[in-house]
Length: 377
Image 1 (cartoon, helix red, strand yellow):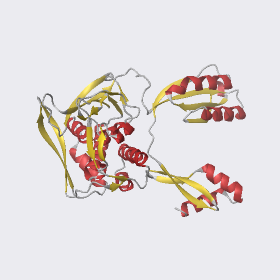
Image 2 (cartoon, one colour):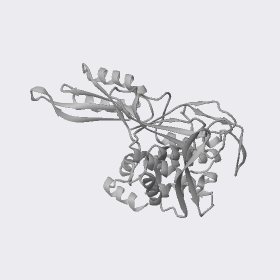
Image 3 (cartoon, helix red, strand yellow):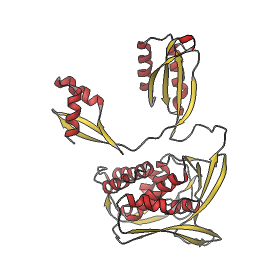
Image 4 (tube, helix red, strand yellow):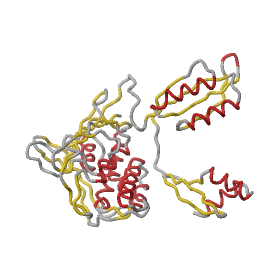
C-alpha cells in the first residue's frame, strides 16, 4: 500500500499516529507492539476530537513516569524488542543527530525532551501502524518549517529546532507560520520510512485519516492528513532513498577473470552490490548472469561500464525496493589489532576484511579468529 501525507499544519509523531489510526490501523496492534518493548507505566488511547471544522483522531499517551531524559541506547534497546526496522531507524537517526549537535558519542548521548515515554510510544506506534496497514511506500507533500523559538532544556532555540533540521536533510520543505510545525519525532519517522516528497502519486484511494495535534489554531483545523491507496499498474519514476536499479545481462563468452574484474569495477564505481550467478542458455550453452545493484543516479554510468567491459549487446534494467535494516559497529581487540563487529537487529558478525588482515599478520586460521572475535564481545 501507498501512504500519502498532507502535513496541513505540520507533522508530529502523535499527529502521524492519530492519522494512521484514523485511516484504519488497529489500536490493539499498536498497543501490542509498544508492549513488546518492555515499557511500563503508559496508556495509549485514540480519541475523536473536534479541531476547527473537522473531526479527527487524537493519539493520547498517558504516563505514570514523568521522566523525559534517557540515554539513547536505552530507548534503542527497547525499540529493538518490537522488531520494527522503521522504529529502530527513526530512533537511531534521532540519537545520531543529537550526538552530532552536542559532540557526544551516539552510545552515550542523553535525550532530554525526546527521552520520555511518549517518544517511544509515538515512534514504535507509528511503525506498528504502518506495518498493520501494509504500507510499503510513503510520499509526503512539502513540509512547513514553522518559525519563532522553542524552549528546551538547552535554553531558547530557533524554530525549526536544530535536531529537526538535521533530521530533515533531504526532505522537501516550505516556509511556514509562527510555531513549531515539524517535531524531531515526525522528521525522524519520515526519514526512516524512506519518504519521497512531492505531489500525490497515482494510486487507487482506499482510506483517509486525520490526525489531530494539541494546538488550537484560530482559523483552521490542526491536522495531518493521511491517504492510503493501492499502486496502479503503471510503473512510477525511480525516486526515493529505498529505490534501486538492478542491471543484469547473460554472458556465455566472457572469462571468469573478466567477470571478477567487472564486479570489482562496478563496486568501486558506487554500485551497492554486484554478483554473478551460473545459468544455462539456449542450445544448452553454459553461461553466467552478471547482476549490478545500483542507486538510480548511477544506473547510466554503470550500464555503460558493464556493456563496455563485457561486450554484451544488451542488458535488462529493473526497479527494486531495497530494505536496509539499521546497523552499528562495535570494535574488539584481538592480538593487538582492532576487529569491527557489525550488529544488526537479529545478529552480529565480524568484518571479513579485518579478520583477513589479522589472519595474514598472525598466521592463524580465519575461522579461529572469528570465534575469538565472538568470544571477545
